[in-house]
Length: 55
Image 1 (cartoon, rainbow, N blue to C red):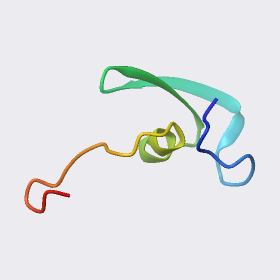
Image 2 (cartoon, rainbow, N blue to C red):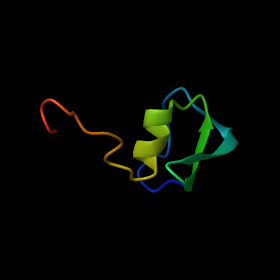
Image 3 (cartoon, rainbow, N blue to C red):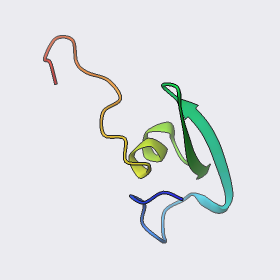
């Protein structure tokens, strides 16, 4: 499902997969994931930039 995720550990429920859309694209995650952890697990590196510091 998600190529950037550890195979075990953490507090997510791997028996309960979830699908969601972010920025017009479909992704998958698990029950207990935060939006940030699910996006990182799906290989999304940038979700927003700092206007002030241009990071």
